Image 1: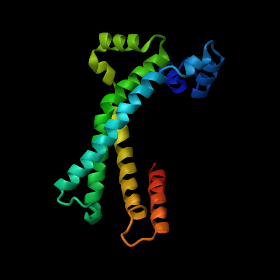
Image 2: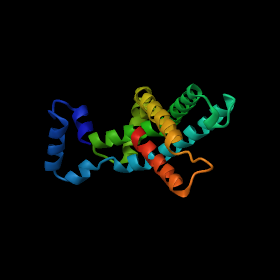
Image 3: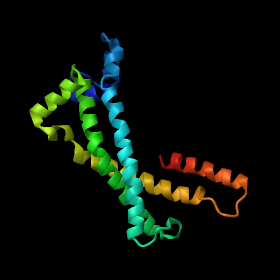
Image 4: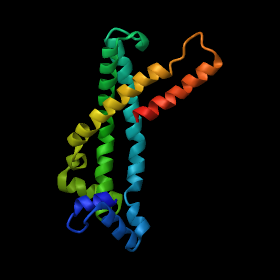
Length: 187
């Protein structure tokens, strides 16, 4: 909220901290801070579902197209390409939900009004494409970071988490921890 306010009216707020302090001192401070949280939360669920669904299905399809369904036998460069393209496809699809959710959330944070009124106002003024303002820029920001994150995650998971057939229980448990660590390091 404070960052959105600062960006929307830099002359009114000297910094994000200044915007936050002014919000906290205002009437209905808690409501102002959490303005737009409902559309953000409601949009996060389908956006994430699309992201991970597209990522996983793209990954499997790309592995099949490249001629090897077994990722442990696939060459390093092919794995990087598969995971990078899968991450990009996840971003492209999830952004169809993510971007409108962000546009609505930011408009609610800047202006007063209900989400329904805000959506109607955006569509009346700019059409449906108004809900997708910033789609391209969002992809330019998200695809490189997601590609790095998922390529790194998959490679670390491959090294730290894939169990071998002849491992004992203790080693298998350490490999389960490896999945968590791979996600933490990649994140």
